[in-house]
Image 1 (cartoon, rainbow, N blue to C red):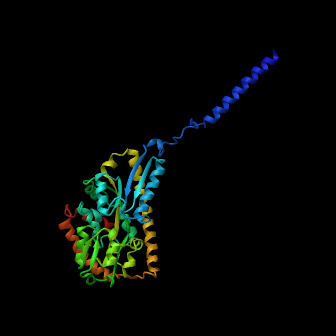
Image 2: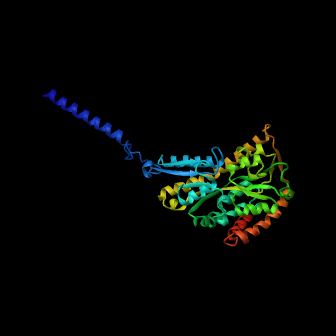
Image 3: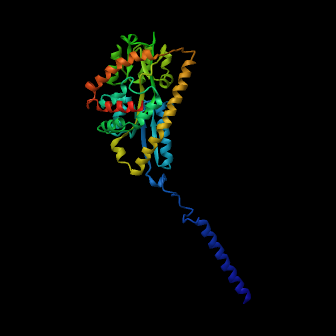
Length: 365
């Protein structure tokens, strides 16, 4: 009888300890079980459907726009725990710059980085970025204006959205510089009959016609060969692009004019963007905002590195000439007349967006 009671007691004790151990393993004191992978619910894969987006750029692997799109894709993948995968396409992967604009507008792709120069025939007001000497010489100040301008981020955005394109952000890829053969471009006289390659924008063409040049619109994919063969005499771009595309190899001079900024836009198809789940759209906006500082540092790094590379390229020597302030003032005076051309002949709203932007720039200065 005593032996039987001991067995019953031992069995009961073992069961009690086992159940207690299971409870301890399954409950951390907060009510969460080991199999609960939801965490705080934010950014977990279970919160978003698996999606595949396409993000096209106007540049190739390693260049500013492409690495921006890669960074954007990586951050969205991480924030959604792999639910959102973004395929990044370099220039030419889905056609020319103008092809990419059409693809975004039609919804063939969801996202694109584009420069307003290739939308000039579609959104007249976007051509204001072609105006020379509009933004401050200080690149950081220019970026601050691009970040906060109501004229751009509200008024100009509305004009693009009439075409089913929403610019989520504007950002600089650096100051624009000139390359040429035979002579540097230090005065309007040296632009006389100069075959200048430009983007497809009537206002860019007007700017160079005012200097005396013959502007030729052309995709950059054709530009190296055109420079090499003398089809065009020169071009404008930020330093990193000149160096990475090897334009300096077929040009004798690099003129540091800093007459303009190369402004890029992070854009989305409006209908697609507005149809996103609120939480997912908020992540797109958040990531876009985060990358404003990131891409500013990236363009600065690339422009500095490629200037050094061009300077040290003894196999393809390029003479680098920096305009004096007096020389820039001559070009600046001519460029002011082009602003009136924009107001009277280009803008569909009588220059109202430009007027507001000039006021915002004046406040920063």
